[in-house]
Amino acid sequence: MKPGIHPPYRPVVFRDRAADFAFLTRSTADSDKTIEWEDGNTYPVIDVEISSASHPFYTGTARVLDTAGRVERFERRYGKREAR
Image 1 (spheres, helix red, strand yellow):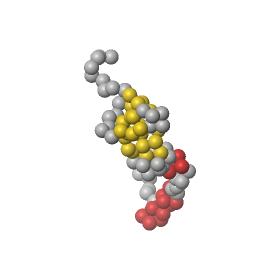
Image 2: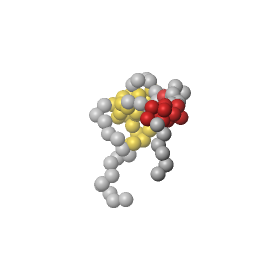
Image 3: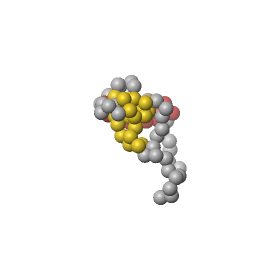
Image 4: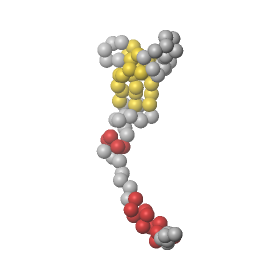
């Protein structure tokens, strides 16, 4: 690797404010905000909109769409497409 062209890779806290969930990991992302973590050290914190704690797929609240019903309704409304 070329020296001096890569951003620093350091510990960063990602925080999902909607779910009140945070985790410490390593990243090159930068932030002006800091937070004191459970180990007593201060780390940069990055607020995210959604994480595994609030995403419907991971929380089990995802809805399954009935795509077959939608196709049938479309065909009823506009007719089936004929083969060429």
